[in-house]
Length: 252
Image (cartoon, rainbow, N blue to C red; front, side, top):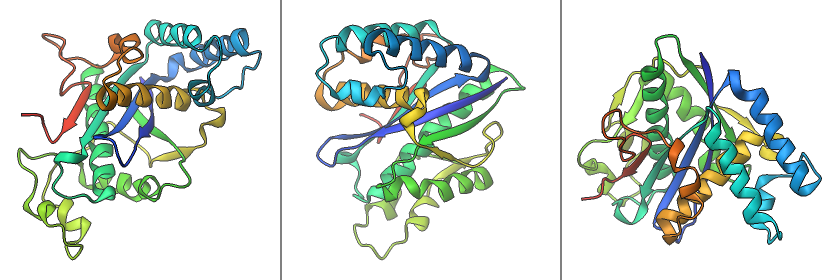
């Protein structure tokens, strides 16, 4: 089976966590899900092409009810949620580009594990919101290609010593080389950028990353709880930590 993971991020320089979230969607369900989301938009907003991001940020009278139905739709779908969080306050290096690359790699690690666990013939591609004004996001194109060649970065138990050096003399590539890598077997093709204006699944990823950010940065979990059931979980006790959501550096 083939899948697409749609990615969006939630970043605020004053927040504790950088959040990157993925909505993993099987291609076999894409058409029906897209139609259902547009139907929902039509019912509430009389506009099948309204952007969920605009609705999320608005004070629309039926906003809460809309998102209740939207997350209910996600829960009934075959979509799966994964996420990675970088605790910026615990990172010795404050390099923004390092945080984004680690978050992206850890998210792909969750995706790769899912594809491996789901069957030997499962492969997936990655689509991300274009984020035209973010240099860190745009740089992920070449970083993604490096991951396909050399493997997904996997965090060590301790942050590499070079990452503790606040001097800009140490090259980012040298810092990343201090991390172990896991070969990529199931993720294929280069990173694809699309504008989320007409992509319901990128809009869904935006809502998901925002809800996860609200939970971890502001301790508001009312939206997170509505899709918690479709976050990837461990096989034995259903643990989300380390399976569906990875936090780095790991909480002690």
